[in-house]
Length: 146
Image (cartoon, rainbow, N blue to C red):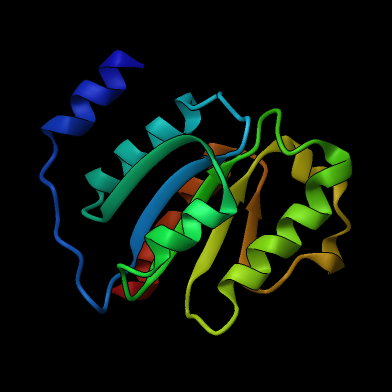
């Protein structure tokens, strides 16, 4: 973890621009497993994106507070242990409500997402089973912005 944090801090910090998204990275409440999120933050910065790493155990209410500062946000979360499978669908619905009336998206990463029916995934929420899948999507996403 320390090496990822060190190498991330050595990368150039880009300022947000209205035409490119700001990536805001966090873990849901009670989630403490952040190494995948730290690595993803490093990869995003390496590709030149503006990122804000807000860390572990963040409530949706706190995400909403951050959301007012940037015109275009891609929220990124990793679900390792939380939310629990029985709470997962309602948690994703709360995220969808937060995204209404915005151009923002939420990228959610975790093997627990395999348990949600594919047709119930809201449009503004993209799900990935691993950090590797997310990085593959990021390459396609990056090409679409060019």
